[in-house]
Length: 150
Image (cartoon, rainbow, N blue to C red; front, side, top):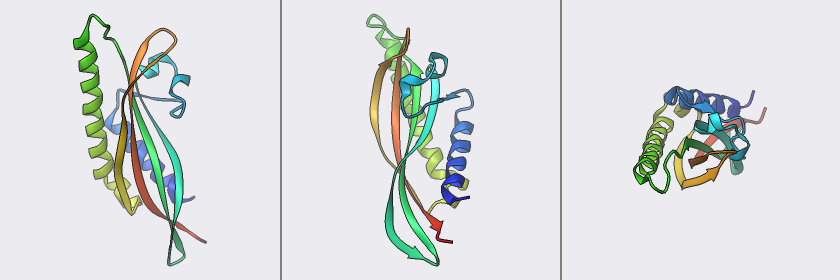
């Protein structure tokens, strides 16, 4: 098994432990493909592109890869109820803060990678489900790890 499988499992475990009441998105790439129950309080992880960092050490090469963790919430606010909308935004931002701390400080993740950094987020986004409105934030992380040549 390659190192990326171990890294993905470690990230998955850390995030599901951090958010035990959230449901995992079945499609973390195309958010709108998920059911509304999951979107109301969900998270998803997907690995993005990788780059060969052109270093070889003891039959191992280094890979830089980005991954995205998306957090979703039901937008229960309306144009007449700005307080609920603002509370939902604050809740997403607080969850993002906890997520960044967890990913950066988790021992299993840190032991399976050389470098892990939070890069950015896309800000709060609003989108529609079949019958409800939702908010989400996508957070981008970068990691570097070694893969074996043999």
